[in-house]
Amino acid sequence: MRDEIRAGMTTVTSRAGDEIEAYVAHPAAATARGGVVVIHHMPGFDSATHEITRRFAVWGYDAVCPNLHYRAAPGAASDDAAAATRAAGGVLDDRLVDDVAGSAEYLRSQPASNGKVGTIGFCSGGRQSVLAACRLPLEAAVDCYGAFVLDLPPDQSGLKLEPIVDLLPDLSCPLLGLFGEEDSHPGPAEVAELDRVLVQLGKEHEFHSFAGAGHGFFAVDRPAYRQSAAGEGWELVHDFFGRHLAVE
Image: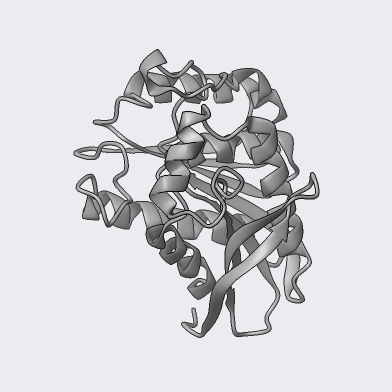
C-alpha cells in the first residue's frame, strides 16, 4: 500500500451522455489495478465522501465519486444540492444507473485499469450500489446500510423510490453488506429477509451486522460514527475488494 496519490475534481460522462461533476483519486504507481465507484449518501457530495474516495486510491485503486445531485443544483453547496434532490423525490433509479455506468467506463478507460470495477455506497448509496450491481456488469458491490431494497420508504421521507427486490435475480457480482444492529432503515428484520432472499437465489454475498451501531456508523463527521464498527467494516471492505478486484 502506497500513500502517493493524485486527487481532484473532473467531469465524467454518464451513459446517457450527460457530463457530470465528479471527484477522482488515483494511485501514483503504474501497476495494474481495479477501480471503485463511490456512491455518496443522500446528504451529498461532501468532503467526507471525498476522503473515502482518496482512501481507495491509497489502497491501490482508481476511484471516482460522481456528484449525483449535480443536475438538481449545479454549483450549489453540498447541503443545498442534496435538499433540491430530496425535494424532487430522490435520485431517479435510471439516472443513477447511467451515472454509475459512465463512472465505471471512466475507470476502465484508465491506463492502469485491469478492467475490474466495484461499487460501494452509503445510506441511500447502499441501495444504489445494489441497484447498480443488478443492472450493470460489475465485479463486486458493497452496501453500507442501504434501506428500501425490499420495502417502500415511509411517506414522510418524501422519497419516491420503488423496492428493487425483483431485480435481485440479476445481481451480477458478489455483494458485501455492512449494517448496524440499532438501525431502523434497514432494521435487522429487513437485513435478515434480504439475506434469506439472496440465499434462495444462490447469490454470493456476505452480511455483517455490528452491535452498538446504528445508521451512518461510518460517518466520521456525524454523531452516529462508531469507531469500532467502522474500523472493522473498513477491514472487511479492504479484504472484499482485494479478493474481487485484484489482478488475477
